[in-house]
Image (tube, rainbow, N blue to C red; front, top):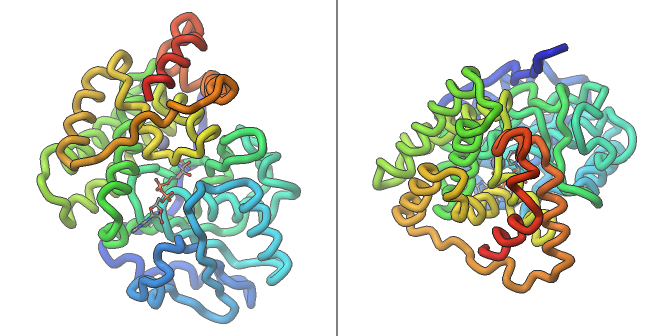
Length: 358
Ligand code: NAD
Ligand code: ZN
């Protein structure tokens, strides 16, 4: 095949309060006594207004997941093993949280039917068997994990997604009221992930009309909420939720670029989280994305964001080399950003100098 024939989420429900339709949505998917498992970000454990609305029935179970660290292959394997030991099989897995929880739900759902460790499937199209039924319910907007065909995991050797046609959710519930209480900083960083997806897609060599149509709309909505509005309101939650979706659609048919390639190095060596890592890197990318970076600086000022500085100040040569290797290993991202001859312009020395600025 000459063109990418990529899967989309087959069903999506949108609307303030749509979370309460979950019981009706999942009822036909129930397989006898096999439970639905709800992976919920631990931050909601004490928020009864969400927890009591989770439609538990029979053996259904809520598992609270701590997201201090982004999801790891060994955590996904352990969750899968525990579910198999307790229940044998499940009717489905429902992830309620930001990108970390959504990726965990996607990955565990796949690993219920794929043998071995999830680390074996980090890469492209290595998953060959349909997973169990999976629902994604974002409580933070920006990553596009709700719509993408990947579940990003940190493994023993690399941070890389389970990219496959089987990875996309079977159902997504977009309820903007769920993002309402996200902390200002976190909302900003995850929102910037979306903004950066758009800038990298729209300024990449892989750009095409399909990606452009989604990227432009998403960028416009990001600017609406982070540049033109002075307060965060319901309309902001709604716009950013749809910006995230469109941003994800935009990169589905193009690629991300320099900020993501560089930030993967930070994540692998320093454990820097995705949204904040992208923001730290993007802050210094005026050479590659001049107008996007200028607007980004304006957004940082407007929302009083304290961007961490000096995070590489104490890195050893070995750490710098690992970051550089991880980053330069992301060939498609560099090719999208700088063209086929990217290795001529992005050398290890240049990348080291960039890391040293952070
Ligand atoms: P996250 O899921 O890691 O959550 C960040 C923090 O926000 C956590 O402390 C969490 O407890 C908190 N939080 C989430 N929702 C909240 C709410 N409504 N109220 C209060 N606190 C809330 O953050 P993220 O930026 O959404 O996701 C990052 C992850 O997504 C990374 O692991 C990254 O690799 C992954 N990612 C995946 C894709 C994909 O296509 N699959 C794309 C981009 C990023
Ligand atoms: Zn991203």
